[in-house]
Length: 137
Image (cartoon, rainbow, N blue to C red; front, side, top):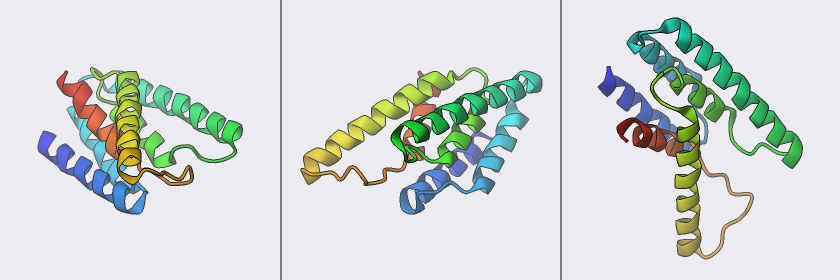
């Protein structure tokens, strides 16, 4: 199952980089695999619902404050889905995702010397890299 999950993550990574969207079917498959692999389904469901509600609140709060979408709704669904994995702290994943994306932005700035504030940067690759950083630490 780990290899199938890894291949799904690669698909999400590539699709988000090129199309800046995460297809719902890929998130559904990730959720199904993680639910299949979990020992405590009840706790996993609670975790997913709580994570989804918190991330939705953050998503809409940022949308109200800045007047535009700061990160995609697919990222909310992806983070909620991977929160099924009970031994992984979602806060650490978000922290590492923001940190790795910051490194990417700095490198992009050093290479391009100029970055538009309107430029969209896919966030799912950083979420998935962070998932494995947290998983393997």
